[in-house]
Image (cartoon, rainbow, N blue to C red):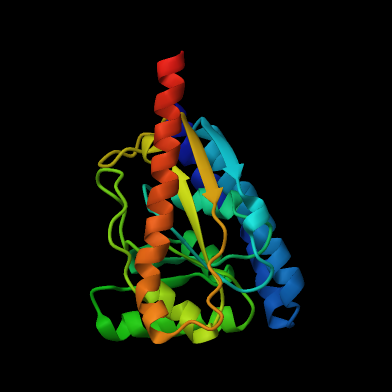
Length: 250
């Protein structure tokens, strides 16, 4: 029953919010960017937080003091479908567009709202389109937005953090902005791989200190993907070790 209610809400909210979407489009056409972004953030943030709550997610957010002002590139491990609502609902108060798989662009209503968030759809199977998507992401960062990317390019099968692809870091290099690693835990238990059923779970989002890229050499930029990945892995492993210690003491 929980899953049925969740999917009804998922689509019903988007349908009911259509007049608000039209209002957002009107604001955009009139050049009222701040009002547009605030409205879109409010609608999508409420939707995302309710999706997690209806699924039984218990969210803990740590490290928000590390969020920098202004444009940046945020990078994280990628566990499951609930990563996106977690980012939309809990990663600070400003607009942080996401890079998403091109297939999501085919979903009605979701497509429209994600475009209003300035999200970028990337087709990794088409090099020309992938390069165009990276250029679009670079544009939005140059306009002052913070772009969120899952550099593994796909959800983890076993919870391990895979190799980070260089595209996300090219966006940061092009605009000379900080890279902000953050760690997601628990979302893979909310919707398990190969299933659409939703389940309650404890979820954490931990923002790590930003990596200041000012003065980076070519060698520094080349090493950055693995540096960011190593920070995420270390923070993830520390949380696992902490959990094991609590279990031993209980």
